[in-house]
Image 1 (spheres, rainbow, N blue to C red):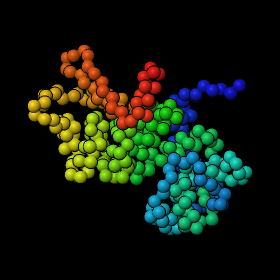
Image 2: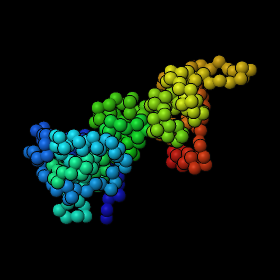
Image 3: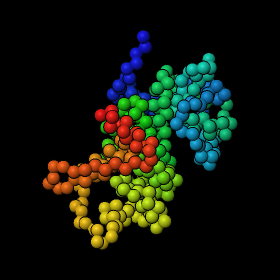
Image 4: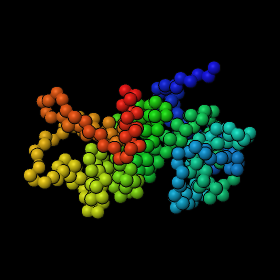
Length: 296
């Protein structure tokens, strides 16, 4: 009977080991298009992309620039491939689809590859890691990659931070952006909001409204932080509210990221009790919140 228990991996044959599969071993990287020690030259028509690759869009100008570099210097780092699951004698790309596409433009006939024996799960994990390491990745795409590594493979924020050479607060701050409304996330993806602006909006009850104000008025991150801390209310209703401490704001961010909804904590200094407000955008989110609460 098949084992239906989800295998919980630490960093063993997990993130750190897979990271080694997308980096060339010492002595393997070399210029030109010839195979080096550990590499195999494979006809380009026998190499196929991974249909489950998370990255779908490849910038045409970027590919053309890379193709020109390949014409001049060859493939500096070999592709990582595995035996194709459905085509005997062919290979499926694990890491390096961008180089494969550029090599087609450069009209190369063979490519250096490193063959690894990897499961479908390993291939997906490496694809997500490679996607996170893109230099042109925006903060939302990066956060989605971290969330996938946590949800699909059970990695913790600390494990991801160590394996990718980032700090745990950096990982946590990016994940909190997934708690923003979808329209605000879209502004980040389009480059109209910086990651700093987005982080400042995470705990705002009117994040969508403030985001539009930021874009239209060109506000700085510091100005946005001030707006979030000191919301405008009619003078007769204005109350002097204590400033939230860093731990409370961090907890709000963690809960917002986990629920993918805006979460606000009201906890007065020196008090034992307080309140939590969760803002949902539609009935579907309300149903999801109810499912979360029912599971606990």
